[in-house]
Length: 363
Image: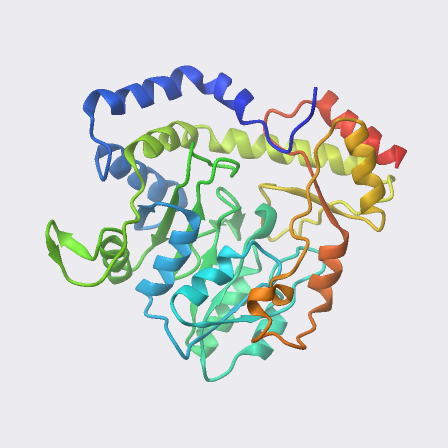
């Protein structure tokens, strides 16, 4: 039987009673949009993250887009971000008419390098948008200091980091805005698309709430041009169930990751690095190797999944060819050529990990 990258079925079976009751409760009320489940989830997430406001939206991509729009970014503005991430990070910048400025990454954490980010600041820079890649917090203390020195907004891409902490604080709580994805495979995932924006700023929260609901504070009264980006009640109910278990899920991910790392120390791959500044929640377990193709072939023979996140850095994507022509970001380019992600999820058993480890040793 194949070992997948993530097994959502086994998690559902463990939580089936709770989730089925939550879904049935929504169906019984027939209240599906902007109802009590969404309001309760927002309150619970805000309390968990230690922030004043949490606003549910329809996806992680929308969370990034609406956060930048609420902050007033637009044409002529530059946003410093990582090229080693999913395209949604840069898409959101482009959606508001701003320009993504790609800066190379730390070779150990794969996150935005604060020193290189500092060198990239220009009079047009309005914000820095770090990604907490694979569940490892970016160097938020350095980036927040950089933003304060230049009067910039810090907007966090927390799509892969729900529950991760930096300096004892949750990711999402450091910046002016934090943006989360609840895509099904995420550490905290729903059963469709979903996302959330968090902030301590009352004005930004009000803007986000209007933007997600057609620019409206009061029904049929529209103050700005907004969007239809609301987290539905079924997804909110499912997320409320899973939120009660998120610390257990993340702790088990860390246990599994540390088991992998101990067993792979002499296996010819470089395990993930933990910088000690925060708590990594291992949305992905990603190694570095010079023999990626051979290892992937061995994993396939052993019926174990693997994946490359991400094979092409954003500055090398065709969509950014015009603005990034000639741009060289060697650390990101080398990472793209060497990274390999292994199966990781809370329910992954030691025997399953041993099978993955055995295939890597064989290669």
